[in-house]
Amino acid sequence: MTVRLSEKLEFIYQDILKRNPGEQEFHQAVREVLETIGPVLVKYPELAEQKIIERICEPERQIIFRVPWMDDKGEIHINRAFRVQFNSALGPYKGGMRFHPSVYLGIIKFLGFEQIFKNALTGMPIGGGKGGSDFDPKGRSDAEIMRFCQSLMTELYRHLGEYTDVPAGDIGVGGREVGYLFGQYKRLTNRYESGILTGKGIHYGGSRARTEATGYGAVFFAEEMLKVRQDSLEGKIGLVSGSGNVAIYAIEKCQQLGAKVVACSDSSGVIYDEQGIDLALLKEIKEVRRERLSAYAQARPQARFTKEGNIWQVPCDFALPCATQNELNGKDAQTLVNNGCKLISEGANMPCTPEAIRIFLEAKVAYGPGKAANAGGVATSALEMQQNASRDSWSFNHTEQRLHEIMRNIHKDCYETAAEFGDPGNYVVGANICGFLKVSRAMLSMGLI
Ligand code: NDP
Ligand code: 2IT
Image: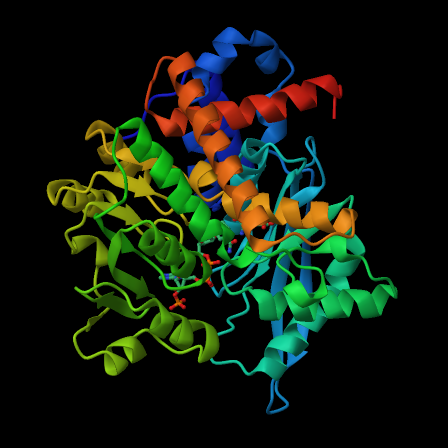
C-alpha cells in the first residue's frame, strides 16, 4: 500500500519514472520524499512555481566511465564506474564511493539523492553526490584492489576538487581503498590536496573518529529518540545487521552505553551470541583477516551461525539495520513489532522497504530514517575537510563531541519540523521536510540554477 500523492506531485513522479526507466531504487527514494513534502508546497507555493522539486530530482551532472584493470593472473577485467554530482546548492558534492557487484546507475542515483538531504541536515557546507562501481572486491588481493583503485582514479581525478567534489567510502570502500585512491590522485596531479577525499588514514590527513562516526552517530540518534520517551539504551537487547564499518562501530557504541547486541550478519548468514557480540573477535575477523562471519562461530563455540538466516527473527528491544538497501521488508517489520521491538535507527541507506516503514510508524515504534540517523559519517567527513582546510588535527574526544552535538541537533531539527508540520514523532516527515527546506532556500536564493 502506498500513500497517495497530490495531483501535482503525482504528475512530477510519473515524469521521473518516465525519464529514469528501470531505476527502481531511485524511484523508491524519490517517492518517499514526495510523499512527505505536500504540506511544504502549501505553505511555500513559490517552491512549486520555481520547480524546485523537478530541479532537485535531476542530477546536475552524471559521469559514467570504463575501468580496465588486470588481475594477479594477468587476466584483463572491465568494470563500469559512476559519479553522480547531484546537487551543489549547499557546498561541493559530497558522498561516498560504493564497490559492489549490484551497483548500477539506479543505486548510485538513489544514494546521491538521499545524500542531498542528509548533508543538508548536518548543517555543514556540503552538497550531495555519490559514486561507485560494479567491481566485486570479495576475494581480491591487496594488489588487485590497488590496481583497480588506481585505474578508477585515472579517470575520476579530473572531476574532483576541494571546492568541486569530495568522495569518501561506502560499501566495499574503506581506509585501504581511500589510501590507494588518494595516492593515485596525488601522483596524477602532483599536488598534495588533502581536501579531495575524506576517510583518509589519520597518519596522512584523516580525521580521528571518522571510522567510528557513522555507527556511533546512529546510536547517538537512537539515544535521542529514546530520551524523548524518557528511556535509554541501558540494559536493552539489540540487533545490528551487517558486520562492516557501520555495524562494528554501532555495536561498539551500544556496548559503551550499556546495551547488549546479541546478533549481527553478513551476506552469508547470521551470528547469534546470547552473551553479547565479542567485538574484539568481530574486528579481528572483519577488519584484519577480512573473513566471512562463520569464522566467528568457529572461534566462539557458544555462538550460533545460521547460513542465510534472517536476523530480524531474533527477539529484541531495538534494531539497527546497518548492511544495505531494502534488507528489512514488511514481514520482517511485523515480526520485530510482534517481538516487542521499540526502536529502529538506520545505519544503512534505505534499509527498510516502504511497507516496513509504514508498519513501524503505525505501531509507534521510534523510527529514525537513514538520512538523519546515519548522517554522522558524512558530518565527520565535513569535520575532516575543516581540519584539512586549516591544516589542523583534532583529538578523538573533541571530534567525537562535535559528532555528538551534530547528531543531537539533527534529532532536534527533525523532531521540531515534524511537530511544526502536524506529524509529531514522525522522523520521516521531519527529516525530509527539514532537509528539503534547507536545500530549497539556497537554490531559491541563487536564481535559476
Ligand atoms: P561495509 O562494506 O563495511 O559493510 C557492509 C556490510 O553489509 C557487510 O557486512 C556486507 O556483507 C553487508 N552487505 C552489503 N551488501 C549486502 C547485500 N547486498 N546483501 C547482504 N548483505 C550485504 O559497508 P559500510 O558498513 O560502510 O556500509 C553499510 C551501510 O551503511 C550501507 O548502506 C552504506 O551506504 C551505509 N552508510 C555508510 C557510511 C560510511 O561512512 N561507511 C555512512 C552512511 C551510511 P558482505 O561482506 O557479506 O557483503
Ligand atoms: O552514505 C554516506 O553518507 C556515506 N557513505 C559517507 C559519505 C561521506 O562523504 O563521508
